[in-house]
Length: 380
Image (cartoon, rainbow, N blue to C red; front, side, top):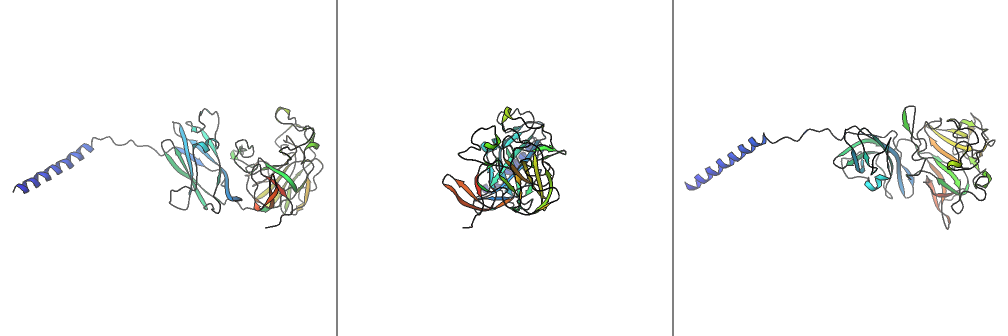
């Protein structure tokens, strides 16, 4: 009897506890409702993975806009496989890496460079690479991690455009891919996004200023004389078969000079920025742009069909050029700056080191500051 009484008392106590707990739960304040992180994420133009041994690279921009009334501080960004449910990132960038990737638009009051104030926007300049032998998935998703929240979004393909195999636009040795594909904070091509036609665009994303260098210098002698520059007058060639869409000639060379010493030979307008230039339709919606050519050197005219390796003209210093070089880019439009810069690969070249050009590269794209040799390259 005593045992039954204890069991009954225990059951009464248990039911009382459950009833009391449920009653008290009615008076516990619920967690206030809140919307997900109010951060718009968009990629204006999807990337295409390209090779630079031993890695594959994706170079593109992610735009962020803070739609909330409070600041959003970025702490980390991760790229996820858009075809899998796994949360394991393919590539990640911590706050230290993000500081050199983030550009706050407008008046920037962010002391750390990572805080997007209410109503403000930012651009993330992304240059992601895989490890040797690893490829990017067909689709990636961006994960933004802030000081107190996270958000997944902006799914993009990693194969937006066709990768064409092209011939180098110049020949010979000691060529540096100045401001070439990369993510350097001082790379004016990489940070070359502008608004045209009411939308953000970057035709220079993969542009290269081809110059010749010796002992880290691009000239010898008087720096104000175009003849002092190693690349001045060098021949320029068609990178592929195609039709000439534009061939502009007749603009004089500038006297070389940087910063305040730059004085263009003729007043610059939007149309005169490329100087003497050629645009070739390569097919598949891709266009090769050659800029700053030497006056009177153009060997082709609008409407001509050219073949890969055909002589087009010579390097000069016309248009918006501070010193002689060939500005070369492939974009999605024949019009100046209106296309999106897209990657391609060069059929063959050698990578330069202090001991000579001893590393063969086939069907790859040189990156910023790499020094290369073009010409006959035999596969090993």
